[in-house]
Amino acid sequence: KPWNTSPSQFDFRANGQQAPQSFAQDIIHLCTEAVKVFEAEPMYLNLPSNIFVIGDIHGNYADLQYFMSELLLFGDIEITPYSFLALGDYVDRGEHSVECVALCLALKCLSPHTFNMLRGNHEDPGINGDMDTYGYDCFQAQARCMFGDEVGMTVWQAINAVFKVLPLAACIDGKIFCSHGGIPRYYGPQETDDRLKILQSPEFPRLRSLFEPLDMSVLGKEKMEQFWVAAFDLMWSDPSDDDSEMNEYGFGRNDRGNCIITFSEVAVDNFLSANGLE
Image 1 (cartoon, rainbow, N blue to C red):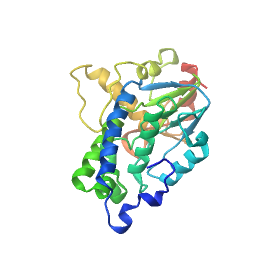
Image 2: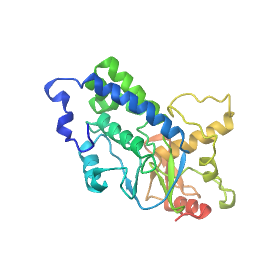
Image 3: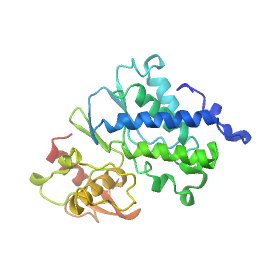
């Protein structure tokens, strides 16, 4: 389908029909190509302006279509003179998760340096496959409903294989730090702050899920846990205006879970200062 297809044209489920199997095969092929593109990119992107930054999409094809119709020059990603950065959470909640991912990956493959994508906390099979929590709004449930159980699971797995290799953070013009969640936690003096060095490490693993046991055999326990914590904070942490329960470095607990942190203005200022960011 072209990028400006009306969302109503995707509603195979409205009359009890499933999507054409050819659409599933197209998505699987697209995922194979997209993995190659993302594997060639670092986990920490350095991007120039001019650039449009797009927040959570969450299966809302109408909004994504609006952005593209308003921002793509003559509707063509390959001649548009500026670029895009999507901050993650492409799936779940909204009813067009499959279509949103397909469009984003198609734009990425058409013009890899123009359309950039980061990984959010919903780009994880442990979250987007959680039908107990999200019900029909779960990405896996939508894929299975759209294509049938067997083919739907194949599509869901192929897209999650792409999610595994998405970058985690980006920096625009060497000044503006971007991630889906927040900044990695750090408890130490600014002069030894090595968080950007960790993100830029060529050893940074591309993890299928943050909720699966880590393979310590290659990098060792200490380094793997360091990478895992950085990835988790980039995808999951939240800002907070309440400094009352923050530690001296500006980080605190989060009601969403034991491993999830919040960060305050102090933490942000320290991070920016230590790394020459704005």
